[in-house]
Image (cartoon, rainbow, N blue to C red; front, side, top):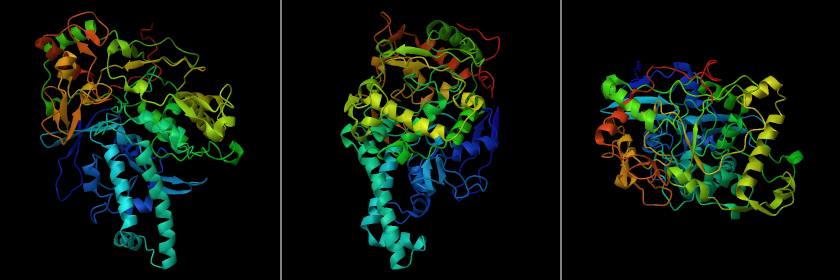
Length: 562
């Protein structure tokens, strides 16, 4: 089912946006697009009035937002009066050291899709942020801030727009501007500094979070890891219902997962005060918003292929593809009506996701070896829990986990939750949580996967057709653009300006290969004929079979379990 809403009149007369039935109302979508998760990238007034580095156009203009792949939209008096693009929001902090009003990055910046096809714009909520180039956007923001500091005319125009006319007002504005510009510059030159250009649809979220927590916010730059493992943002439908999330299948607790993600995108956290009583581990964590976002995602349905736009599905071919999928793929990728866990103490079942060793699937292993192995604890040494307390150098992952757990614990301590409220906040997970699996990749259900190019966790395969080839036969270099290819189902590689080179570190398109020979070491299935490939693709286009089909959170009471 399609819901067609006309966009507001504009000079360029963009095509109407086609919204797919994913179980959300118009109000749900609008709230999700603009809700703050606590990110405080730059003061709101500075952002609204900042010019681009090389001209007098505003950085926040639709033209500039579109240049970096943010999805622009008209102003909305309910929750977006300033007409920010999807993925940016106003964050108001009412207490603590970061009190003020800021622009910040939202979940929707990286978890929302727009597929363009023959002038049409198809929106996929909770999908892969397939157009947003976060690295380039932050670099451009830093360039704009530095250019304003260096150019008196630029700064003068900014001051004029902000009504800072007196010498004292201009001096105060410049001091504030310098502080905030320095923070963005540090983010660009430390958190994001990489030998690899990520390009659209990819971020190294792990390194971003770990760098901010262990190196930038602690003031210990020696702990910085070079972000060399860019991945595409995962799609969000069925995530709250699943046993494990993240590409590496290492998270179960939703509030821990979501707050930790915010730490990577300008959440203000105090990691330099001497003790918790003096502010250590304080943050402007938006716990309530994060919980509401998670609860909204429990009602998000995978998108159904819009036949009116991309063409009719060959149902007979799809049936043949389903049989192949069940025999070759379903051992890893759970299929509707899904297999679930037994009920836990809260009476909740969770959708089983496959956890496949990297050594078996053979896809890029950068996520497992890109981080610096050890970190200096510095002034935090005596504030860490046993047995880490007092240690001067510990494994990086242990410092990272200890810090994010301390920040979350302090944020939750201020809420005075009842047991029932705490259970809801933690997604009804049963504690203690099971040990995190090591060196595995998550294999989630494939419903709606057609709408999530590029493919593999690092976005190194442009379409589903190539994903079903022997890895050695895949394209080694291709352009990443915004146009959709409904035939091979993925990116139209004839468009786009960013060239993704899969021979570079972190970009490998090896593994998940269908070829003759023993399974394992990157081979996951037999070599397929072209007829078989097209049949599987047709099946993947056909699921979910029903528009707006929301997977029940907690599982259906009579679902299969194992």
